[in-house]
Amino acid sequence: MTQSTWQIPGRIHAAIIMDGNGRWAQARGLPRTAGHRAGARAFERVVECAPGEGIGVLTVYAFSQDNWKRPGDEVRALFRLMEDFLCREVDRCVANGIALRAIGRRDRLPESVVRVLAAAEERTRGGGKLTLRIAVDYSSRDAIAAAAGVACTQDTFSRRLAAAYGEPDPPPDVDLLIRTAGEQRLSDFLLWEAAYAELCFTPVLWPDFGADDLREAVTEYRRRRRTFGGLTASVSLPGRVA
Image (tube, rainbow, N blue to C red):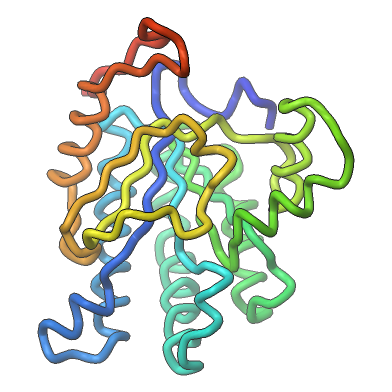
């Protein structure tokens, strides 16, 4: 895949830090795993409606390097949910033109997760409607450090960075980065690619996030004036796709 085939012209790259599953469950007196299951349903809703909101690339933060610090039972439950989603939804991804990719380390993941990820990537390789990137065991700082072996241009470095987390070519820069649950930090997510991203922080907990919330974030993005360090807006923002 070359740089030019990453997304349909005029569509944006949106990234989401899916935060708030645990708090959602706690507020309902439920175990944290129940929050993660509800979050998985929210993820499916957002993937389904993303192309209609003008999104061509969607990158989601599924499991950070720091998430290994969580209790073992919770970590195992997260990986079971991931496997279930991939096995259950891969046919729908193929039918809907969704190309799935995983970014991040794979050497520490359960072997069954690695197999399912690889199979889903292969099955969905031809999808041209949406590229769905799932960040798993991901650390932006580690990826940058791995790519920074020699001095080089930004373009060369971008290619080295993509290789550091398992992609053959660099993705487009992030246009819109959304974080749910009221937190206002990047948490080691896409630090290089989000250099000029428009940031959207919402108090909505991830399991409650849906199509209307995504539409609101994209609408707010379109209202903003992006100058990329210049004095006048240098891009035209895409409209909603019918």
